[in-house]
Length: 421
Ligand code: AMP
Ligand code: GLY
Image (cartoon, rainbow, N blue to C red; front, side, top):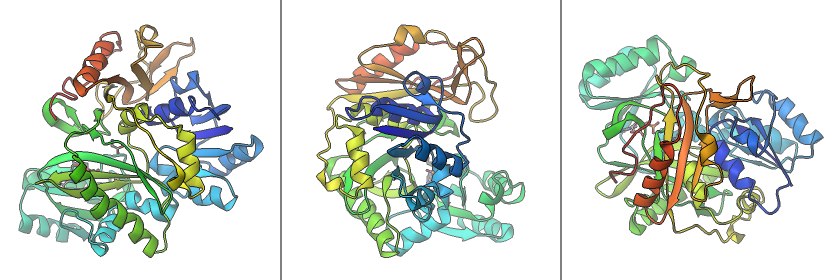
């Protein structure tokens, strides 16, 4: 079987790594990939935003299945285009991906279907939004409607901060048209958790629980990032809470979409805030999380191709999914300056010492080979060091021990992943 994976992050490296272990996969291609992915798949120069070239490639090479990593191609309708041509592809359609691509759509959908989420109001006028913030007081959360590479949410402690956020989104338009509408949302105080499921639109297979660390610095300080580290399982999600999440959030979402004429197939990711043991949706993502995937997939025992084929064929109920009991933990090594501006092209030392370890895997994100064949930094999040252990503590020790071997100029990482649950 031949598979094409779209994307270039740690998430896509984890997907390709898991697919490479499948008993039925002969060849994996990745567009555009990175230096880690290039060691186990063939990376292609095809412009990943050019869906018709991708489709030509899939037809010409007889690709059996395409897997989409990031949200952008999903929001632009790659699944609709591939499915129209009868091609198997993993991910929701453009209509279904609105759950992530429009926060206004997601909030209104949740309201219609009584899915627990923070109170909110939508604004197209700066002055009305400003008046509302004054009325509500702080802390308060300001969100751009559209996609903003994980940077469109501002949790504001003061009135000044909230106005600054509003100005950046609505006046300076730092996210372009994604900021035509803003959501002003009640601040929820609680514990965050990520909950991901596979679904074929009818059947739902939950993944193991996980926790992301969005803030840049230790003790959850500094700006929000795409994610600085993860672990799995997340002990906050007890079996009772998990069944509450399924019954009040995941099932009503899949069912509610169906009632509205949208069949959701692929991965559904709910970013949750747990307040007094009750789950509230902060956001939906229509794809695997990054870096959640780097801790979830190493725990998957079942062949990932079986799960993907179950989704594509609407037969997920036939899959008996199995997970390892071990815990896993991932620490992101980032470039100095991330999530703001950073330099690229610094050589990465030490990776050769960490090859072929049983319990430690280095997932590449922003890396590439330079002209001399040396692996250099090429992005904000550079590597994800993932370890498996009998419990979180052991996984944590192994991951941090591995990091000692790795060096690149400006390397920054959190020291407290997994310390505080
Ligand atoms: P989102 O992209 O919507 O998940 O938001 C990014 C981060 O902002 C979340 O992971 C939370 O840490 C924080 N956040 C978003 N919405 C809220 C909220 N209503 N209350 C408190 N924190 C929030
Ligand atoms: N780790 C957060 C995300 O994938 O959106």
